[in-house]
Length: 217
Image 1: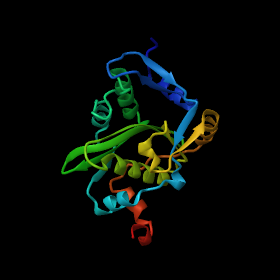
Image 2 (image 1 turned 135 degrees about the vertical axis):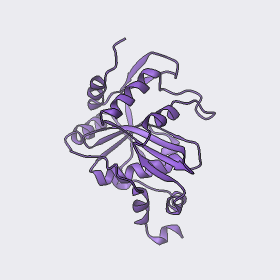
Image 3 (image 1 turned 45 degrees about the vertical axis):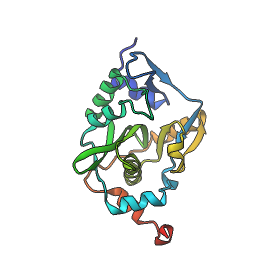
């Protein structure tokens, strides 16, 4: 098996490929190039009304890159709703290395000092490739996603890749596009010089604060 390196993975992502394992304990890694791709439009991202209220109440503390290894480890854990995961030891090692080099980022959600949710992904130019998320408290991963989108918009990103479409992301306005359409968007996004803001504070609160009061009635 070819040894995965950060350079190889960055090159693969730049042409639309990403690595996956069949199971947490399976050492085999496959390169995935789906016929259809899930993307979340940053300019039309929808925040459900109930989630806006949760964010405005400030139930969670949010951070960026505070504990990337803990986030990816939590994403790799089996749960009753997700008994199998695609993250094996080699992929985890790889993304931690990419994080240390400044390419991979995490959003963390905290409650009473405890990590209760989060997500991570890879930034390339103006594209952010979302990889996985986890939640140990109601709405924790959803709030992390809103925080990510708010920061991507401020940072100049134009593409948020979710790899696949699922019911969980449907509420945010996910779109399914063809492989060729995705690669065209990716090629354009790679020419953009974007940067994920990492300073403290809740950007999500600013984003949802722009919604009209009528939306919550």
